[in-house]
View 1 (cartoon, rainbow, N blue to C red):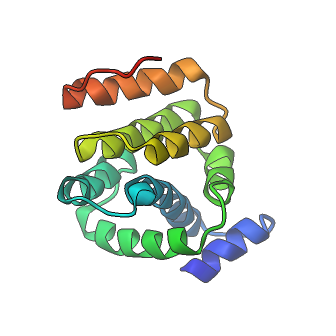
View 2: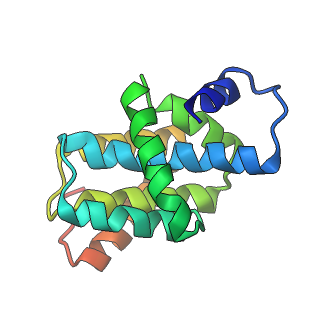
Length: 156
C-alpha cells in the first residue's frame, strides 16, 4: 500500500482505478489525522476511540476498513517528511466542503484529550493553509469542534 501511495504521489500520470484512487486519498486523509494525534507524541485513550469514528463519518468508510487504514496511515505518517505529501492529493481531489470536514475532524481529535497542544494547533493551521482554506474557515471549523467538546475558544 505504501509503495502504491509513493507511486501515486511520485507519478500522477500513472493510471489508477477509482478504487485505488479512493484508497490513496483515504490513506492521505487518515495520515493527516494521525499527524494531529501524534503531534504530542502520544495517543490518548479518547483520541484512540475517536479516530475510527471520525474516519467512518468523514470519509464514509466501513468500520471493517478502518483498522487497516489506521495501521497503514501510522506507517505512512512515520515515513513522511512533510504535510505536503498528503495535502497535494487531497487538494487535487477534494472539494472545499470535504477539506473543511477533514479540518473539522483534525480539530475534534486535537481537543479529544482535553487540551490543545501547540503542535496540534500548528499542524492543523498549516494543513488548512496547504488546503488553501481561508482563516475564517479554519476558525469556523475549530469553533464547531470546540462547541461539540464544550471548550472555551482561545483568544484569536
